[in-house]
Structures are given as C-alpha cells and as structure tokens.
Image (tube, rainbow, N blue to C red):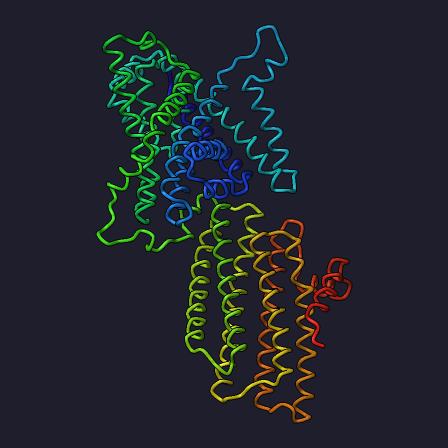
Length: 594
C-alpha cells in the first residue's frame, strides 16, 4: 500500500462524484420538468404519492433534490403537507436505484470468451457508453440527444470511478489499521455517525452508499459494520433539506422535518430490531463479508420496509411535524404569504423555469383583468365608478411588483447551468415581463382618459361607442391569445397572435380616418376626438406588445432560434403563410367596423 493507492482512490472518488453529477444533470434535463409536473399534481392518495415520489427520484438520481423541490412546492402553496408525506417516503425508495446500478460494476466477464457476457462487463460496457455518449454530445444538434449523451457519459464515468476506487482500496484489506477502523464502526452509534458525516460531505446518500460499495470490494466490510453506516446515510441525507427549509413558511419547515423524522424513526426501529435479534438469537451473516450486491439489497429493503411501516402512520408523522413547528394562537396558515418563485427550484432549472412561466402568466392575467375592468368603465362612462378605478391601480402595482420579483429571479436563474433551450426560455421571459408590464401601463393610460372624460362630462357619439366596443373586443382577444401562448409554449398558439395584431392596426387606421371626418363635419367635438385618438393609440400599442410576446416566444423555440423579429414580421405581412392569411380573413370578418 503506497501513497499512490490513496491518490488513485481519491481520483476514483472524483470520477465517481462527477459521474453521479453528470448522470443526475442529464436525467433531470431529459425529464423536461418531470419533478414539478408530477410532484405538484400529487393527489391525497398515499400510495400514488409514494409511487411517483420513487419514480421521480429514480429519474433524477437524488432524493435530496426531490425533497428540496417538495419543500419549495409546499412553501409556494402548490403542494399540501399531507401530499408531501408520501412523496418523501417514495423518494427514499427511489434513491436506492443508484446502488442497484452500481452493483453491476462488480460483474466479471466470461472465462470462455462468451461475447455477450463480456459485452456487459462494466469495463467494456462503460467504454461503449462513453463512446456513444461523446458522439451524441459532440455531433448532435438537438438538446434532447445531447442530454441522452450526458446520461450515457454519466453512467460510464460512474462505473469507471467505481472500478478505480475498488481497485485502489483492495490493498487496504491487508492493513490492520483498516480492519480495526471497520471493527470500531461496528459500534452502532459510531457507524451511524460515520454514515451521516460521509453523506453530509458528499451531499448524497446514494454517493455515500456507492463509496461503501467500492470499499466492500476489499473484503474488509462485514454486515455488522456496513449496517449502521447505511443507517447513517439515511439520516445524513436529511441535512440539506432541513437547512433549505429554515427561511420558509411553517409548512415548508414541517416538510423538512417529515423527511428527518421518517429517516430517524425508521433508523431507530431498525437498529432496535436488528440488535435485539442479534442479542437473543443471532444473525448467521453477522460477521460475513458484505458484498456490493448485499449493500444495494439491504439499502433497498430498509427503505421499502420503513415505508411500509409508516404508511398507516402517515397522518401521525404529519402531526408530529406540526407539533414541532406550531402555529401561533389565532394564526391561519392559509393566510401566510406564499412564494411561487422559491429559490430552492433553482437547483432544478427546468422546474424553476416552469414556476417562472406561472409568474409571467400571472402578470398577463392581471393585465387582462385590468383591461376588462377599464372596458367596463367605458361601458358605464356616465356612471363612473371610482372604486373600480382604484382597484385597477392596485392591480397595476401588483404587476409592477411581479415584474421586479420575476426579473430578480430570472437573473439568479440565468446564473444556473442552463442548456440552450432553457437559456432561450429565460431570455424570452426577460422580454415578456417587460411586455406585460407595458400592457398594464397602456391600460392605465386608457383609464386616465376615462377619468378625464368623466371630469369634463364628455361622452362619445353612438357610432364612436360602437367602434370602441369592437376594438376593445379585439384587444381582449389578442391579450388572451398572448397569455395562452405563454402558458402552452405551443407554436400553433403563438402564430395566432400576429394576424389579429394586423387586423387591429387596420381597425385603428380606419377609425382614425373616420373620426377625423366626423370632427371635420362637426359631428364630434375636438376635445372628445382627442380622447378617442388617445384610446386608439394606446390599444394599438397593447396590440403591438402582444405581437412582441408571440415573437419572443417563437424565438425561444429551437425551430425559430435564429428568428429576427423585424425580418420575420415584414416577411409575414408581405407574403404570409396560408394559415396566416386564413386567420387574417377570419379576424377581419369578426371585427369588421362596418
């Protein structure tokens, strides 16, 4: 045993950790927001929650990531505390998949040269995965294929690190000091502490168990020493979620405690059960070598058994967390402020992007409500409602606050490790928050025109009111189309906006001419005509911003990644597609002035 064995072992650990990170990142990106989409829709059924908690965690290879996201969802009010219980239980089962994958690193090739058996030997198989992975990463243009490449490379590096560690630590088995260390770790308290510390350092129970599996190749680990270490890894994995929940709502803190209590009580029950049986009867395998496969199986069995034990007591576990973090007298948890843009989501960028999308859509909905409220004011201009005007201004302040909040969140999100698709989405959202805020501003301008008309006791002619009603209806629809496109991110929805924007431009141009003629003929007073033109100018600007939203959303799609706004619009207006022309004709008929 030399210093170089230690260096090689540490280098193998570096490969192993990098492989885990690459695999986890690739799986998470390939999942396309699976965490948020699945976890946020969990029902109250404990079995469904456990199942999807396990599936999602197996998909992203991290129970810590799943639990942290669950805490964020609870903090945002998207997920109820009761739904979090089952997901956290399932996450503990899902994380054992890593150990089951790593047991394959122990497979040996055939002695008689069987090609198929030699093919799945880890050294050969990982080499093929690495070759396939690097080809996809370097030569694929689509991010989906690149993500698959990163997954393959992650597995290859994982196996390589595992084999390097195992080879490097094999000479340790000959050292008395090494043997004595694991004899000491047979003490349950020291073993649990060691497992917890390793997990805290690696930030992953799967990584800690993987390291234990690598060391097991030396033959120095027996069940008596491996058992408490595995127990400790389950406690150590609770540290990150607990720290994550400190500055959160009460329910988020309780979600972190659910994870801790589940693992702590489960560990205590297993320790009592295992050591009681050993003292009274004795386990036949107590002092026998614990292999890589044995460690993987025990890790899985432990989490499945503990989950089965806790299923009938899920409500009690929730109550225990609520007793630990109590409500103050007279305080209603539902009334506490919830933050949809939780910074915990930043560890999983596509989840953070999904939450950002909801916040941007919320800005659009608030702007839409304000426009509809302003239209209501014009419908009853002779009976102006100051309270409604006040509500509109309060909602506009909400839009402004949302713009600031989302903007700050996007800056932090932009600093994350984003792929090309995610980066385009973030860029689009930077533009969208400004566009929706400007829609809100122009709506306020239209509100102020209504207030000025009411103060001056001015009113529009019957024809002017009819024309405005048609124009307002077109604007309401184009705002709805912009919001729908933001929600769906579907190209079909995005291309619906521009034809209507062109129709609005034509309506505004026609109405300005019509109104000028009315003013010349004396049908309309000059001061009222000014208000009419002001309204038309502002609705045209709103329409323009809806068009901008659609174009920015198109540019966020891979198919339109090279799109240039002005060239695209100019080409569309001069020589539109068949769909564009059909929609243009449809909207022209729908919003015909005469």
